[in-house]
Amino acid sequence: MPILKVSLRYLLRYLLLAVLVLGLCLTWRAVLAQDSPVCRPEDFGALVDGQHKDTAAIQAAIAQCASSGGTVLLSGGTYLSAPIFLPSRVTLKVESGSILRGSQDFKDYRLPDDLETDLSRITYLSLVNATDATDIAITGQGIIDGAGQPWWEMEFQARRDGLPETRRPRLITLTRCQRIRVQDITLTNSPSFHLVPTFSDDIVIRNIKILAPDESPNTDGIDPIACHRVQIIRCRIDTGDDHIAIKAGGVDPNFPDRGSEDITVRQCTFLHGHGMAIGSGTRRGVRRVLVEDCRFRGGKHGIRIKSGRDRGGEVSQIIYRNLIMEDMGDDISITTYYPDVPATDEYQPIADLTPTFHDIIITNLVAKGANQAGAIVGLPEKPLFNITLNQIQIEAAAGLRVRDAMIQTDDVLIQAERGEAIVFERGGRLRDAETTGMLR
Image (tube, rainbow, N blue to C red):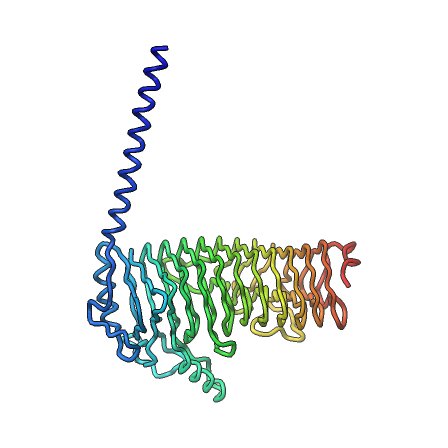
């Protein structure tokens, strides 16, 4: 018994010591949180009236926080700004009721040494920029507004004049960054793409809204380019182009063969727009993508994987599952032609940029009201293979086209108002012929 009493006494001492250490840790964390600076542009002369540019004041607040890390707080008004730049360990927080609005002065976005006069060749800064930064965040329940209407009008005019597509600023570009968090914010009306992490790793994008008019040109929602370990969770995207477009077409001399890998999109809602896409730039490869538990309504495309002979690479290990679609243009679009699938095409030699799509699974998809179930189309010289459709229920005006592709089906029901459920064109094959009776 004495041994037991000693053991209990020491155990109580250790428990008490553990509680004290835990308390000190929690206290220290609280002190650190309190000591983390909050930097306000108003302290540097921001007028916050939406009329005068607050760029210098916002950048000064960022610089104040940069030395030890902290939060730049935009609170209670409209901050008009030209491009700003985030360094490591800085959080940009736009509080509810506040707006960071981009300047509509085109020259604000041009690089200082850019002497180009051809609008199709100019490279612009984004409204919010970060390069080679770590541990950055963009948060808050306010709005970052790109005020993109003048840029859209310039693009519309170029189209009317038959000119090349104009280059325009993006809303947020994060280049070669590590540990990024974008949360709760609303992004709207970008001149072009809204949120573009490029050559970046360990990214969490959660609970954000991205909004732009349906007719706004090239206003993609989220475009991860050559990124690794990305999570996009519970986002609502309603734009004029791709909701999300995972790409690997860019080239960085430091990462010449870097593609996009290990990306998860979960519990998102996609409205007007061109789909949950991969491509069209895939030259460095896109691998290990999971899209699950998402809803689509009223968009041009649902599932969309796209590339072309001039921009292709390997796209593989892709899973779309547990999706609901209503009133789409098409539900499934997987094609190695971009932008359009020609009526006929001839074999061409296989080259470095020939796209290769394989090992793609679509499972548990319920869709109704589309103009067509869609198309799965490969190149004659490089057919698509290992494309699996599993537990699919589609009601559409027209069926699914399959050309230069081998598909496998299991528990698939496609009901087309006109024509065949699946139209097999040249090189289109069904791997398991006994399942064809399930299609009607």
